[in-house]
Image (cartoon, rainbow, N blue to C red; front, side, top):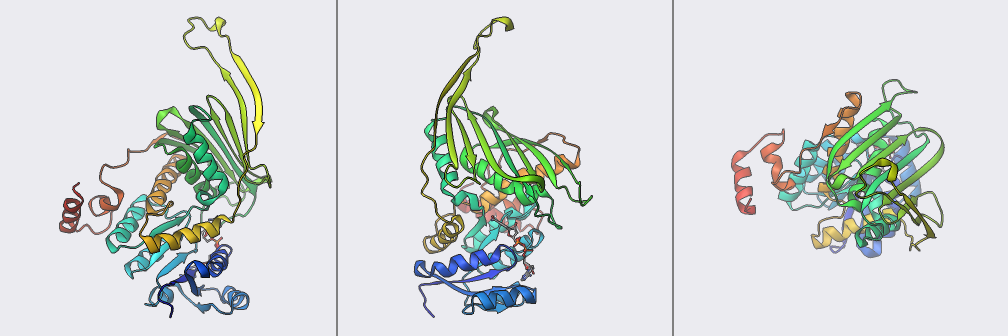
Length: 375
Ligand SMILES: NC(=O)c1ccc[n+]([C@@H]2O[C@H](COP(=O)([O-])OP(=O)(O)OC[C@H]3O[C@@H](n4cnc5c(N)ncnc54)[C@H](O)[C@@H]3O)[C@@H](O)[C@H]2O)c1
């Protein structure tokens, strides 16, 4: 066994898991040793054995977690299994990369963060878009002030399919939009409203509209749908100086910056006097050095394991997305009612679970941890 390599297991070899296997195999020189894959479905195991004969296949996640020679695991199974599987893997001392969304219950996210922190293990979420060249460029552009003050954002993620049977469209597609927004804006969401419709399977929403309010009066609207004739992945960010359009389906013009805007009245007393002045300027397409985002994500996971660095899309990012989407789900169930998001607790997330979570509270432990952290 090569001690310098991180021995990886991938759990779940359905649609997405094999992409992790392919990327970790290609990262052999970066320190990955892609050792084992597991799936309960014999046809999927067979496919992996045919594609990657060098990878051992197992029939269940627990067999990977119980293998002491495995350092790190990817969990690419259905969403409702993320929490129990990640908990088991962390408890057995593995570094864990969980596919998005980390969990659907923020308390579960806090517990996983706590387990990772106290066990000294990396917990990372597969927020793939945070590893794209386009999203990182957007983050830089916003931070540079080029767009001016951010006013509002509209995000459209629609297509025909893929209909899911275990989660609604909100939990399937919107984790992407919410993780992108939280990453590029670096603002705290304060309230969420959502409505949705279950058109095809009457128990699972296939169309949803989510409005998120952020501090600084920024509003974002996200529309996600499995029931749309065209594949659209488009985010528009409107700033006081310029506007940016991010079209993820475009091959070579993913980002366009429009030097457009309108200057409205500042201190006019009567509405009739409003002199709006519109600005129409150049449209600029920034050059992007493209790469496969999942490869970048897998390499980052390896790097964090090696250096102890906190991942870009760590457990905290997964918690933040779960907070927004569980508020959206609550709003949707209440016919679109506004659901306020409590401010992020002053206690760091990784410390708060033993105090606030719904698991078994060990008060002694919690107090000792808080004291040690000076909280
Ligand atoms: N980051 C992205 O862009 C992206 C894209 C697609 C899917 N995903 C995420 O990846 C995850 C998987 O999605 P998918 O579309 O591949 O699902 P899928 O249903 O195609 O595959 C899941 C697989 O997990 C297996 N499985 C379930 N429990 C298991 C266990 N205990 N042990 C071993 N195998 C088990 C199932 O047999 C199945 O083959 C989901 O969380 C999804 O949200 C992420």
